[in-house]
Length: 296
Ligand code: KIV
Image (tube, rainbow, N blue to C red; front, side):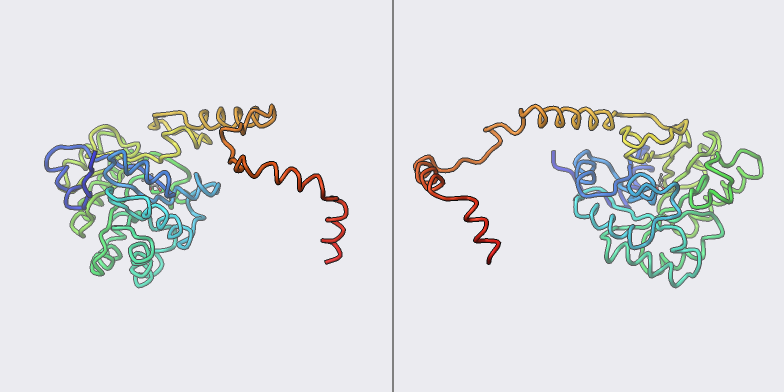
């Protein structure tokens, strides 16, 4: 199957045509290559790598340098999907100039085609500055994990009338500022539906119900590799964790039993020269050779 390069224009057109946008995270070359070959529209190098790749307890620990390192690896594996780099905690909310420079690193060093930032109306001036530097931006509202300590944990957002109104207005303001799509995370489905109808740009849901224009999941979650916790919205589409465990168990057994590697996995010495080697080996005194080496 020959796939076509996904562009931001195509992502936006999908909403206009009523086609769902399928997106997923990736953090390394090999996974990104498989995802890309699977005709996924957009790959987010999410700051979730802080947890699923690096083992931190939340997304606050991952640094710009670590994000760039993984974005480079993903970009090397992708030919078709749109690659978006996720701006980490403190890389864009402290200083607008730094925000633009850090966004630029994702493009220039990481090979990404856009960046994602968390936040609503309050982050619009920063988004404007990034877009003014010709860098495309994806928004992210609702449960923005970089603010978990402010929220008091991984809580569903937009559950009161005021909070829901704020989310709708945030989405409208993000669109006005120029983002090309918005991630809606952990929001009641009725509010995501409302937001999706209020904006012309695509909404990409995660824990936001079925009425978003597209969906995103963390790849290690949906494949059953990262199982530290399972949010309500998560569906396992595979159980690769168990496949890996089974494969490792078989490998250990076969090595211990002497069944792997077999001759079929081994390299061959030319049969004609084998007698010469065997004869030579008979003539040498190994202890003497070792003591010569030690003297040298
Ligand atoms: O970091 C991430 O993986 C994300 C997605 C879950 C949207 O932000």
